[in-house]
Image (cartoon, rainbow, N blue to C red):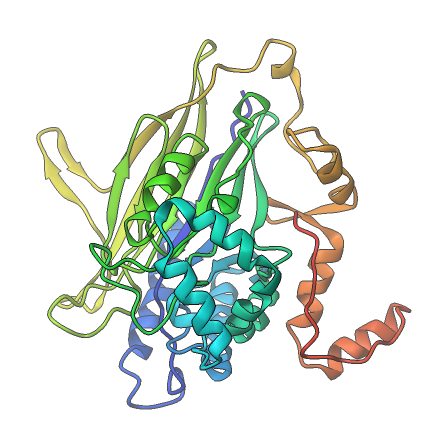
Length: 415
């Protein structure tokens, strides 16, 4: 079997502020530099990651300047790793919202927060015609996320991308949005819960028999959601890998069908529990002929005050020193003998895509180790530079000139 192990950096809760990267009073500046050095060392030993996953709270208060600071730093990170910045994928957190004082926003949020748990999806359906008003709070986040093809809107609430695992199989990653009902008080994850996700975000197609294994990124873990129980019930059999942020504390949980990972914060509050962390996650498909398992290895890196650097977390056990947590997820039986003869996945291979998806990825290319539509790659590279530069690019390749409209909602094709 031609296995293709995948590795990802998982970081969360960076909380960039206006003074980040530009003030002597930015206490996290040195921390970020050491993070890049740590990642460089790890990647030098184990290879570059296939993707960088950020599970929310990129900014501190959803301001444009905060996202600009984050983008500058992510450029430095990708330059150090010698990878395309298009390898970054993100979802919004509660700090990425610009709090709105509009009465309509308050009314809609109250409806989502006060309706019965059983009627959450019905309430979402009733409010859906006006959902663009809630997405206005994510306007600055979306301008940032567009650089990485992770924009979210009422019409396109979820993004997804495939990473090839080898032998015609793929890890399909979905970005979910848990912050539409977020406000000044989102509860504490134990009582007075106000946040919702909605079943519409959990309707992830189960395609393990076709070699598609689902993963999700979401800022809030299910225990923070009013509909968290139904969300967990829906996601566990559908998504073998679930990545979260928000709690500033690393948590690893697993069942026979999924692994749930809550990342520690890269920039947590500097209090008695200050514990900066990040993870490197490796995913590999193990085929044993009559059975198939997805192996997930989690390596945790923690800031150490004594050495002033990030170090890999290891623990002493009966059988020796262990520096990673390894989980084995039961998958559906291996493909038939005929299916096993399929060549490793390429943009034109059938990896369980629907007819519509197959049309959308017909014109594709490989960027690093992920499959992307060529038009999306071009879009990312164009929107990542100043306005005058994209206009020059349009002229150079003979595309028609269009007027810039910052208020116009941009609709993109998902990969």
